[in-house]
Amino acid sequence: MSGILGGPNSEMSGVRCYNAQCNIQNLIKQLKVMSGKKVINCNKCSVIRNEYHNFLSPKMKILGTKGFSKEILETEINKYISTRKELCKSCCNYMEIMHEVEPHVFIEVDLLGYYGNANSKISFIPTTIMINKKQFNLLGIINFIGNIILEVDQTLGHYTAYIKRSNKWELHDDLKKRTLSVAPQEIINPHILIYVEK
Ligand SMILES: [Zn+2]
Image (cartoon, rainbow, N blue to C red; front, side, top):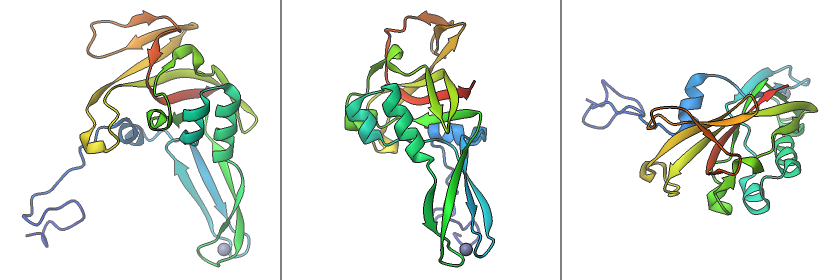
């Protein structure tokens, strides 16, 4: 049976398993709005390829322990997309890898609670940051209410979104009847920050 319906998602019984993970990372991947790309261009063997980033992922150990200052977030994001040397898989020579950033970026900050305090005031999240020498403005924050068990299959919770509109913050929560205005002092548990290029 597994031969007929074979593949990495099939059980021995032949019953097909679907990936029903609904964490925010999976949902954003399905949006297919890319945050950036790694440009692989080897001038020794002329391999040219792009690898897309769904998220920009700063080092959470640093953000978790030092907090969300503009300088720290900028430094960690720019480190993530910095030009570096990597070994070309085709010719085994070193080549320079560049990163390009798209006008909308999703920044993954979901492991804050693992390294420090998961909670932050909305007003602590930098409203503007410089990425690759371009200015990006904070547009929204995806928040998570729930436990902080790190194994995906044991995590139970609820996502909400905070959106900045006309310089005021709104909470969008599908368990509530309407959009609510919120103060910048509201305590949140940010999982994804959304910035747009100015
Ligand atoms: Zn090469």
